[in-house]
Every structure is written in C-alpha cells, then in structure tokens.
Image (cartoon, rainbow, N blue to C red; front, side, top):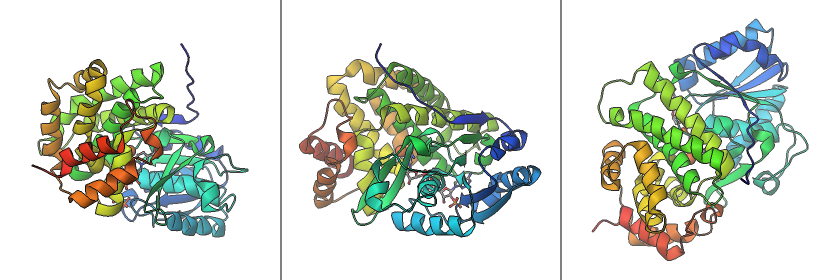
Length: 368
Ligand code: NAP
Ligand code: FE
C-alpha cells in the first residue's frame, strides 16, 4: 500500500481541556497574541478559559478581536503588525476557520514579512511562530490542517497558503464552546465538514487511512444531520460528536485535499457573499451525481455512511437545512471559468471540464 500520513498537531479533547493542559501552552513561548472575532470567543467561554490558563502558567498575552469572516490578505498583514507590536512569541486562535486561518498567516507574517507571492501556495518559511487553536465551529477542521484560506481581492477569489509549518502545535477541542453556535452557522459548518470528508474520499489524492477516517466522520455527521432539521437545541453529546467529526474531516483534507465543490464554492462566497459551508452544500448533490456516473460504488459508500437511501433524499435534507439560491446565466458562465482554473480541479476524479462545471452550476442555480 503506497501512502503518506502526516499529522503533527497535538489534539487535546474534552471538557476543560484548556485548563487541564495549560502547561502545554508553556512549550510554545512566553507571550501569546490571541486572535478572535468580535464577540463569540468572549461569549462562549473560550477566551476566559484561555486567559485563565495563561495566567495560571504565569504567561502574558495581548488580545486582538478584529478577525472578520473570510479574512483577507490585507487583514492578516494588519493583524501581524499588531502581533509584532505586542512582541508576542506565539499565536492563539479562538473561533472558526476565519480566526484559525488568519492566525496561521499571522504566525508566518509576524515572524518574517514575506510578500503575498511568497506567502501563498505551497511554501517553506525561514521561521513561523508556534500556534495553538480552539475551534468553536464544527466545520473547517483548520485545527488539524496545513492550510490557511485567505480572501485575495487582487485575484477576486480565495487563495491558499499551504505549509506544514502552519499546522497548529496544539488544538483544544471542547464541545461546550459550540453550544450556543446559531443553527444557521451550525448547519453551514457541518455541511462544510461533510464536504471535506466526501470530497477527500473521492479525491485523486485519496489514501486508505484518510478514506477510513472520512467514512467514520461521515457516519458521525449522518447520525446528527436529521436533528439539524428540527428546532430542538443539540445536546452537548451531539455538539461533541460534530466537533470530533469535523476534526476527522480536517485530518482527511490535510492528507487528500478538496475537489470541485470547493473550487466552485469560492466564487459563490467571493461574488455572492454566500457562507462557505452553504456554498459547498448547495453544490454537493450535483457533484455526487456527476462523480456517480463514473464511480457509483464509491458515491454509494458515502451515501450509506451518511445514512441516506438515495441522493434525492440527501439533496432534500440539504435543501431543508440550507435553502436554495439562484444565479444568472452570465454568473454561471463566469464561475465555471474561474473554477476550472482552481488547483483542486486537478484533484477531482473524474476531472470535470469547464462544460461539466457549467452543467453542475446550472443544475444547482439556474432552475428550470
Ligand atoms: P467563521 O467565519 O470562522 O465564523 C463565522 C461566524 O461564526 C462568525 O461571525 C463568528 O463570530 C461566529 N462564531 C464562531 N464560533 C461561534 C460560537 N461558538 N458561538 C457563536 N458564534 C460563533 O466560520 P467557519 O465556517 O468556521 O470558517 C470559515 C472560513 O474557514 C472561511 O474563510 C473558509 O474559507 C475557511 N476554511 C478553511 C479550511 C482550512 O483547512 N483551513 C477549510 C475549510 C474552510 P465572531 O466573529 O464573533 O467570532
Ligand atoms: Fe471547506
């Protein structure tokens, strides 16, 4: 069996995992630059727990709470300046993919002010500050990936930083921080995790261990999906399950990457403001139908792991969770043209042509 498997992040999971493992933070440095969005970290307890843990270890920190959803290259440069002003020697991220991805870029830029060209793509840097993360959405899996996805306004899309050096050193997984995550963000982020496992399972770069983890993550997500369609709050066990499943999905994309769904989804986020997970979810069923023509058994395994009798049933549930969206014919043409140039198209098996992408986007968004 030919494969590689590399996952250098120490994952610390469970209630009070930050408090119980505060000594681990000391291994990273002496002064933390804590990055979060405006309010969620303060409201969900992760900021309090992190500050208490740093205090218990006699460490210092600065708090930067200006991370916006879908952070841009300009945003992370400005945050890196603040990290330098603070004289921080390690970075902590509290939040979803936006906080974690911004923190990865800051871990590079605060150590070495490289150009955008030298930052993006597959890279090795002279120095990167160590990073600890606390995911508070159950979606991106960024806590265990070497990727940072940044809005690139010059290119009118999202661009990747991909470096083994930005794998977080520590990831603290405590499902209680996700208890108050609003249902729309929960649904969108769960569907993002689902897309990671499903796409990576079918990817050109799929490997046996990553596929095994992908199926387990899909099984766990499938066990909670029906509950997302009713308004009852999720239990802490369900929240823990989703956080664990999205981490597994992160490990899976760290090994195998994403494919055409993410490639098409970026334009929907960049040009139409659709949330990343919603964009992926709206495309997912059509993507399965496209791949199914060539690989029915593998798509069947994903469907079974998720617990659906048919792709129609899966599509109906996703529509209940995420709604529908329409695009103009011009937009579909433009987005197919952008997607076909994305690197993750090469990771899609079978590889779609621009016409195929146009077909998938039309079926999703042009209606009758
Ligand atoms: P997000 O953009 O990080 O957060 C969305 C919203 O959720 C924010 O308004 C945030 O509020 C709020 N929020 C976060 N945690 C919360 C909680 N526990 N309770 C209540 N509200 C909470 O969402 P995301 O979907 O996790 O991340 C999306 C980003 O990740 C995109 O940029 C996407 O491209 C990227 N991504 C990265 C990878 C990777 O491997 N690196 C993979 C897939 C996607 P605050 O602003 O107040 O915090
Ligand atoms: Fe994603």
